[in-house]
Image (cartoon, rainbow, N blue to C red):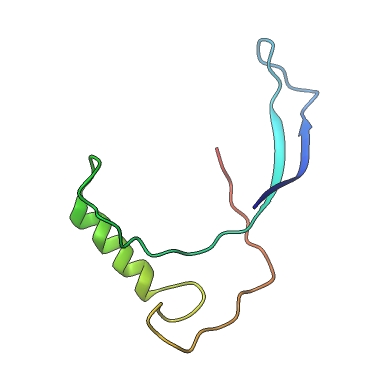
Length: 83
């Protein structure tokens, strides 16, 4: 789910025929495990696997994905800047 809650252009700044814009989005993300075949694509498989393992150990909704006791999701959002 991606919801744009605010979008506006900056009237005082102009570059060529473009004006900068500001947007605020509300997004709902679900953590996922990447257990599919990792033999495709051009990337370092070991680095990717290690990142997945670290994400699993330090999962944001609990200590780890294999841990049965998890905290509930926080209703407050975090700020993320996309460029």
